[in-house]
Amino acid sequence: MTLTSTDISGLPLIHRGKVRETYAVGADRLLLVATDRLSAFDVVFDQPIPDKGRVLTQLSAFWFGRLAPLGPTHFLSVATDELPEAAQGPAFDGRVTLARRAERIDAECVVRGYLAGSGWAEYRASGAIGGHRLPAGLREADRLPEPIFTPSTKAEVGHDENITREQLAEMVGGDLARELEERSLAIYRAGVERAAEVGLILADTKFEFGWIDGRVALIDEVLTPDSSRFWDADLYEPGSSPPSFDKQYVRDFVAASGWNKEPPAPELPATVIAGTRQRYATAYERLTGRPWSDAGRSA
Image (cartoon, rainbow, N blue to C red; front, top):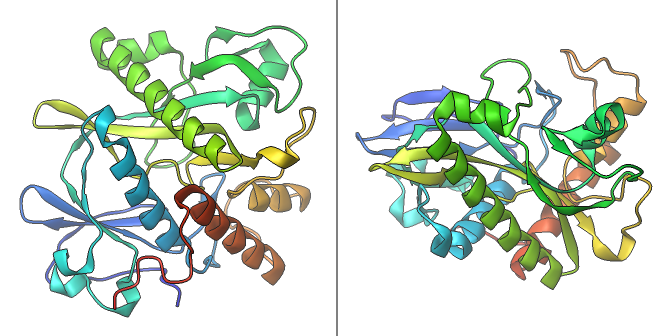
């Protein structure tokens, strides 16, 4: 079963994003529903990826539990019996998160440990990424001397824009900018450690944070195939783009098709849809150590 849109009776819809739909549950809680919609290059495709929303929800729940010692998060539960009755049932199985309401900090907190994606393009053009001057002669997918924090703006419509740490400090204040960088690097390192245990490389990722009760809390999703680039360590070879467990498979297909990255998105063949689903499910299984078959389904 796929889910591309929702309408939950009795709960106000407060935001419909590219992938998630957010409902209010009273004054201080939210319901986040991860659909199976796919976006790439900030464009939503007409065709869903089966099980994608469940992977994002269940994998984020795994990480929120594992990362709890590193600071506050918005996460409360994904247990069906703790959700409002209107958000229970087969259509919602495994794809709904109950969370605390936060005042979002309007910045994407990106951490890069390897040279890939837009970071590789920026490095080739300038020898730096987000104001971080890097050694000359690095190859695509090379490991960086140390992980770097490269924030971007959070755009509601269109593309996020990369900014420097200094620009972030001007936006949110120096103390908050430092806290966002420190928290992001700590979470990234925890992700790297777990990924290495299961033969994966966490090349880069992005986080979002918000204010809850006067403290900075990790919100949205965390360390999923939608927000992160995972490589198989056994297949890793610098000098090219390694096979990945994320939507890079879709990006590579549409880039080869000649698409100009503007709506409408091209139609995806069945092989790309199936291959993307397989990559997402495999990421879940390897990172959590659990079989995907019934993850998150109610009894």
